[in-house]
Length: 272
Image 1 (tube, one colour):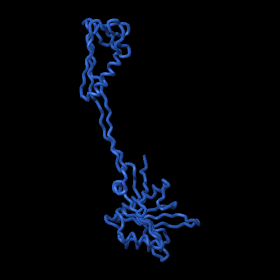
Image 2: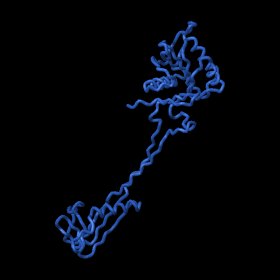
Image 3: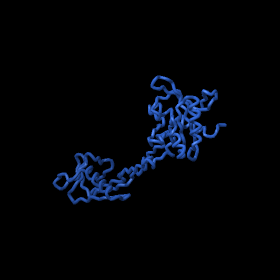
Image 4: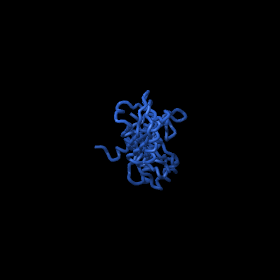
């Protein structure tokens, strides 16, 4: 059975590794050999359990270990935990780093800063528990999308004489309304486009419009002029209304917040 806090240690290890993969170093060093639950023997001969261990090279090329302590406490970390990390880090000659789920008591933070080798303190959380409001940052963006669509439900053209039939004959690109002297009043396509615009403006679920013709006015279909009484069109609202949320929760693995500076280091989820 895993000890209490192991899940948080594993989470922090994933975040540290991902930040290194992104070349986003929150410690200003290039970390290598990152391990969870390591054991290192110190100068005293005591073997210490290290939550997360890593190495880096100093300016002289010497390999220095890093000791990262992780605490998933639901309250702020007390000073004695900082002191314990300081003691272990000195014994193994490591850079000391503390990661906490919530934060640090005021005395603990002051103590960490006043040490001759200060301990870097961080708050490490997932996106859901990060301090978005505190830093005036946006976690979720809600986008409302409205696609206004009106589809023709029925087009009916009434001929002046019953013998004329439009079944299978009407083609929008070749149809025109003509007046008595056979000049073009308007194309059928243009009229339909105008009535669709009127339907959108009306905001009605079902919108109908009728165009009446005088005696001697025609619908021209290719080479045929057909006397007509009226043209009727019915449009139906099939608009799409959709709410989309773009959330950091879906993109971010974890956030490392520097307690001293307030800087954020964001580890991104690996997109599969």
